[in-house]
Length: 262
Image (cartoon, rainbow, N blue to C red; front, side):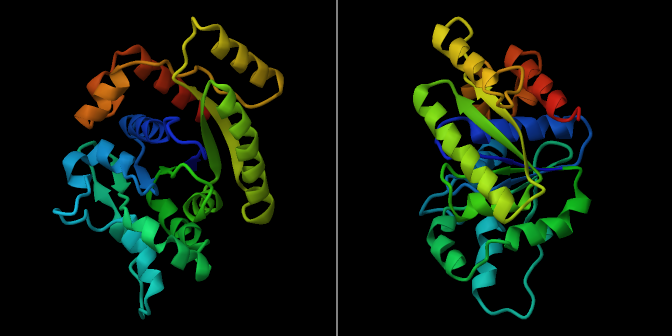
C-alpha cells in the first residue's frame, strides 16, 4: 500500500506520524519504505540523525529524492531508477529515500517541464519491492504534494484541534477530491488523525465530536500530546524503539492496526 501523509498546514505532525507508522510497519515484519518529499528534511533527520542534517559546510546526503527529480531536468540517455536512491536505516526492514533542500530550487523547473507524474511512474516500478510505502510531504499544496497524491493509493491527514486547522481541513479535502477527479481516481482519504489531543480540554473534545457528526473519517484513537515525542526526535529513534511501552506508542500501534484492518 502506498500512503501519503498530507496537510497544507505546518506543525501538525506529518513527519512524526509518517516515521512512527512506518517504524511500526517494519517492526511488524513488513518491508517498508519512507519517501521524504519535504525540503525541511524532518523525516530524514528523524531516522538518520546527523547524517541527514544539511549545512553549507557539509556535503549533502546522497543519493536523495532531489537528485532523483533533478536527473529528469538534464538530458540523459538513461535515468537511474528510484530504487538506487534508497538508504537502509538502523531498523530492520525500514528504508528511506531522504530529502534535500535542493527540492525548493528545482520545483519551478519540474513544473515547467510537466514532471508531475514522474514519482507515480517510478513508484509503480518500485512498489513490488515493498510491502508498505509512506510518503512525507511539505506543508503546502505544491508540485511535490500533488506528485505524492498522484502516486499514492491512500491519504492520511494529520489534524490539530483548533479553529484555524478546521478551516484549512475543508480546503485540503477539496484539493484531495480535485486531485482524485483530475489525476488519480484510485486515491482515497483513509482517515483524519487527531494529533496532540488533550482529552481534558473542552475545545478539542467538542471539535472532534463535530467533525465526526459531519461524517468525516476521524480515526481512533487520537494521538495524545506528550513530551516523549520530542525526546524521540532528539534521539532520532521512533517510539516503537525508544519507548515501546509508552501510552503514545500504544496509540500509534492501535492506529496502525485500524488503517490496516480493511
